[in-house]
Image (cartoon, rainbow, N blue to C red; front, side, top):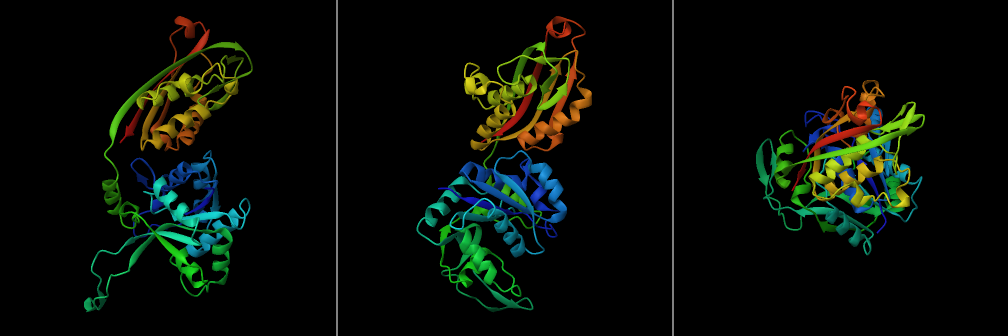
Length: 380
């Protein structure tokens, strides 16, 4: 079921104490939870709409994520959605499916996405919603004046699913004088029948600071796991070396089947080990020609993706490079940022260090370079 996604992340955070899309939830930005859910569900393209003054930050934070594009939004939620729709038209067709989601609902799951997509096979539009279970009251001046029936009432959630042309045309017909609180409202006004797929209580919206604790209560308890990794490669003729994802000019290069990035190899093994998933050779055999010369970014992304598919998360990583040359310190900040980007972590959760062996051993004789890594992850 091919589909595209738009994530609206344009909140100003006036009620939550800050821009909630960038605030941490279980160690990663709120926005990233929704991105990962759509990636796992197989979204063809994911357009993230952010405030214009957040554009540079979002582009830097989300760079390297497959299928993700960042575009500036408008002054209202409706205008931001339309910006996302316009961006999708660059790669998607009018009959393609689009799921529109609020970043403030981070606990989206692959199962909920697939339930929406299944309904969209037979429905023109569909949304997630949960039935109203509380008694309702209408009040004036803090006094109850009516008790409306809750029968047949639902609380709308996101994502909301449509054909791209349907929802684009519906917005084109919508009156700008009336605030559109969600896409179902716009679609219904255009004569589109919108069907309900039952959502989940865990998909509630982050609005106030205390909502973070509420959402964490919906998340499964996590166990801490430590992993370690080690790798070494010999030096050979060359003009540069790739370490922790950064190309460094040098009078030698490291010899290996892939790009011989010992730092990322050690870190990949640490993550796989922490999750009990074997080692890098199990997933990317050196005898397989398709990995010849491959960048090790691919291996590291694979390891963290496997952890996240199991509902886990990387807490922090620490890599030590062991060599006499090249000098690592001038490149350390770039390495930290690169590893953070690959793992979609904040840079302060990535440590890169270097040491020598005081001219002792194979690294001291400059026959090769070694790396060791340690990581902490959580798993349900």
